[in-house]
Length: 260
Image 1: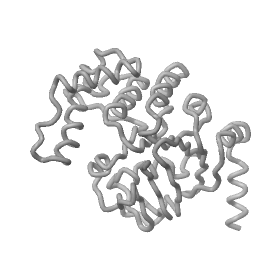
Image 2 (image 1 turned 60 degrees about the vertical axis):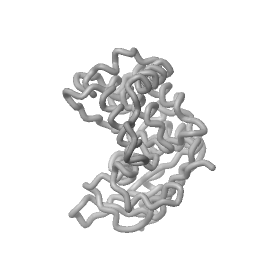
Image 3 (image 1 turned 30 degrees about the horizontal axis):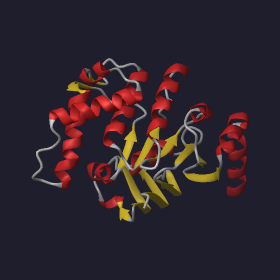
Image 4 (image 1 turned 45 degrees about the horizontal axis):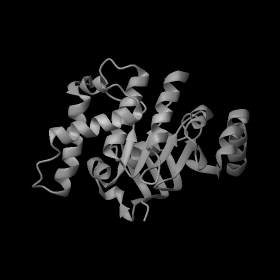
């Protein structure tokens, strides 16, 4: 049975502030599906990504987030990751002195320890084989694993490192927060093709983006439009093309009319 991420009537705000950012988000993403979430700046897209993974800077005031029926709101960020969620950050942080390979090996071992406290973790030969297999699949040079995580990386290299993490950790549902941000056309294509190789029966994806161009490479099953903290419209891939042509003025007008 495929895993399901279900968001029910989710309301959230920045910790310590009264004004809500999310105002009743409802969404269901299943393993094997690709959902695109679009909308103008300030609509709540990145807030939703952060709330899903448990960023403590945000406070959930109402609603539920369920993964396979389990309440994620009762879990810390690391527990949500072990349950099967993954967040590819819009602006990945550099960690000097920690190689990408060591980072990923520790991440795998943390998951294994959570499942079996007596485990010795993944052996170095096993991990090396796994890394090489995933890097070959994604077309990443094997020397990449020896570089310090995101230190001195270009925008494209940071995003490729995120995709490699996704490939190694094999989440049930991956959330990509504006992965196309700051990428030129060539880097965008390389990163998007890597994501497309990973999406399949064992992984679903929620792709957050401003622009339709990313969806030329990652084909969505459903497209959702977020505005003023809610999902206000959903449709097939053609909705993204329509937004590319028309912009968000129609959405703004419809929302203004509904609030009048």
